[in-house]
Length: 337
Image (cartoon, rainbow, N blue to C red; front, side):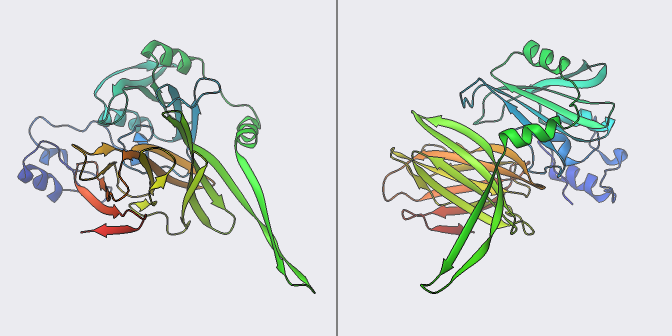
């Protein structure tokens, strides 16, 4: 249970926490003066925003749209759908730089914009369909009119349409392994691996792709493909990646290094830095839902020398530090207190 207050005196937050109920909820009578309940719902109601906590509904569907043939991180539309209640719609106001209530598709909606430090300006709209799906559309590099026009033209998926899209754009492979000696060969059953691209981008002409994978044997992971290099990290599906599972740095032929990570905890943002930098750099965040697994992928880039020690720090939604780790010059990872 966590009660978070922003720009409030600690005694006001503690007073509200004292009256917290089991749902969880706070007693409106104990809220600071002028405060009222905006909305109540699961943390997955804020899924789709770059600064949201890393709670993903396990039955969420996330679709990305961008210019044909380009992996442009500055121009895309992301649509997230998951089961939700009507009261969840207004939780979109939680992360907004500015917002207003309105109506889309004949339904109550919250329309606004958000910009987290280190991320580009984004417009969004959140509403609930009569079918019970909570919908969030987020656009980067598009106008509000363009985003609302797209939302107005959305239609219900036909029978088998979603399955067809997953079959066409997902990647499924069979890896068969055999081993033996001169006299006999023993075959090991093939393992099915489902994968999907979580994010793509370009670093000064070098394309990169962050791919999420889920193996039949129970391992889940991330792979970074960049400049001919491939680095991966994996974890058990039952345990999840934890607050922050970190990769070694990736050298890919430029004067900077790439670092990526995964989280299923309370991480709302993460930064990457070293002693030669004036200020930390925000790591980009991408929600991932694959094969029943849900987590958040992070990636960041920093210019370094051969002997540079990189520090990665994760924070919760209130700005509190959760975890800090160092990546040494040879890629070794060392947690820091």
